[in-house]
Length: 140
Ligand code: DQA
Image (cartoon, rainbow, N blue to C red; front, side, top):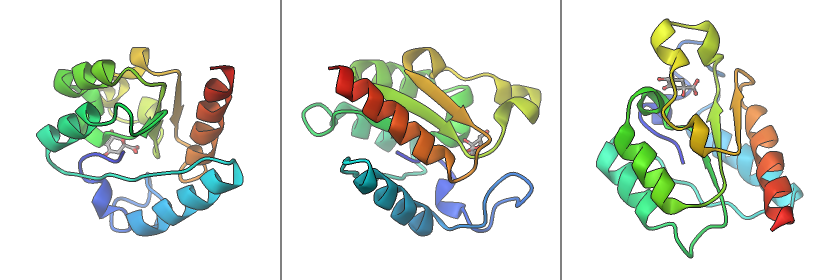
C-alpha cells in the first residue's frame, strides 16, 4: 500500500527518492514477490480516508501488508487505528532514510504495530520487506 505523494515517484527529490515511477516500482515488487512465492496486490491513494477504508477491507483478502503511507506515517492516528483493526502482519517501508532527514520525519505512528521497518534502502528495501513478511507468514 502506497500513501500520499507516492504516485509522484519519478519526479520527487532525487537526493531522497529513486528515479523510478510507481508503476516501475510495482513491477519490481511484483517480480520479487513472485520469486519469493508471494502474490501482490497494490493500492495507492492521496486520500487518507480511502487508505483507511482499504485497510478496513483487507480482512480475508490479504495475509500481510507492506505499507509506505508517505507523510501520513508521521501523524495519522486514523491510519494507525485502521492498521491495528486490519490485524495482519505488516512491514513499514520508507524509500528515503527518514531518520536522517527533518526531525518531524523521525516520528512514526505505525512502527509499533509493524513486525519490521525498512528505511533508506530505496527500491531494494521492498525486497527486504517482502522477505521479512514471508518469514513471518512461514511461522504461522
Ligand atoms: C517516505 C518518507 C516520508 O517522510 C515522506 O513524506 C514520503 C515518503 C519515504 O518513502 O521515504 O512521502 O515515506
